[in-house]
Image: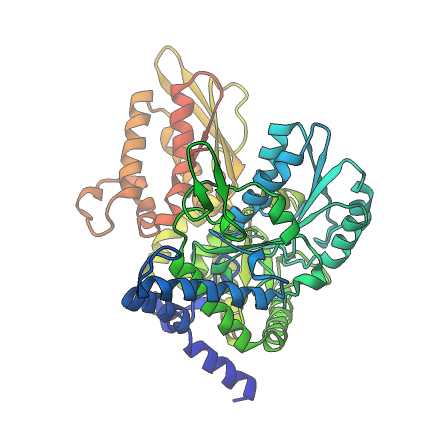
Length: 409
Length: 155
Ligand SMILES: Cc1ncc(COP(=O)(O)O)c(C=O)c1O
């Protein structure tokens, strides 16, 4: 066994679920873009909270509350370090990517938008980076502009540049496409937008787990991601915002924890980041996410990027050899996501058949209907890889696809 | 894997490849569109009812979808011809029972005739909507003289 194989085997031991059988076959989990599996340390961190110091945060004077508050705030620091933010108070806990985008849309963008203004997104956004902007546009009379993509599934950058007129008040763009795998040139986009004074939000839901993130290098003003896609729990996510933007914004929700003092005449909002964390938050989620990020940092992005791009290359090679299989999304820079369609077999049937071989993939439109329309397919089958996946698992995927083709021929 | 063979029976595969009564029916007097937004399946059902006898004279369908939804639509059309509207609705009820009943209770599914091919669907709850789309669309077409749209999801 090579050193790499040994290391992956060791990593796999951290993920108990990877040992289970599905229909009597070993689980081959290739649906990591939907959600990743959780390592033992994350699961233990959550149960440790409930077993040993469950209590509400920022309120009690008692010992348990202090411990819970410390762990919750420690996670915030871990995340700040992880993305290289300037300040800890630029890290806001949310429910996930979707909530982060909605928060920025409603608290920052909407109050500043007038009829005739424009918001720019791209053709490869997840529905969660389309619908909040449509709502805001409908309410204000602003217009949503969409940057087109080419046949490989890459942004047409020149079109992007052309759209940056002084009507544009905000740009919101996905870093890595969840259905095509395309990696977008965020630094260039931010530079261009900033040269015209336009703030940029980056949807990092599919990049945070694959690409080392340095927020200062990226330069964006807001960034959002979900804990569950980076080996953490569901129901927790992060909104990063530059302090000067967050300071200017009104709260998203009102309630406890986000206030300094309340009287019926006047309420004074709390400081950052608490201004945006109304109510009792997802405490175990935040603690679990902190642990997940520690775990990922320990694995290290050198290993993650190298191994995952090896998996991507191997998968694309093997899949392209299959007669009648077409890969949707052939960008020059891709994360470990492969979408494909089979001639004469609907993705839904592919998904069911792979499932009984223990292979978990996603089939459907992946919450990106405009991409499906762009490529003229109703749906795709998507295999997405994490650092715990192996080439052997890709071989099983390929064999299983061959069975599908045989059955439907 | 037995369940898989049960789901993708030869009959289903055959109807998927060579769907019967496929295409438009310009003379139809009942028509509905069905849509499953989760997987992009789209179907149109055209029915010609003889208004005097109340019997289904002809039925055709059109659309794109997975093998289960296509075969289900195709088989449905073969079962509907010559039936009265009441009988068609009864058939729908029977079909619905087949795909949603508890797989371990085989008691009530004897005498299903052609509907028996849908028994395999019960083992795959994620696929019940695929099998049902055409049937719900048919029901809608019968209930409405004008064109209507049905969706498997509430939107
Ligand atoms: C690119 C992208 N953006 C946003 C989301 C939404 O994330 P969540 O459902 O965790 O809020 C996803 C998740 O599928 C995604 O892939």
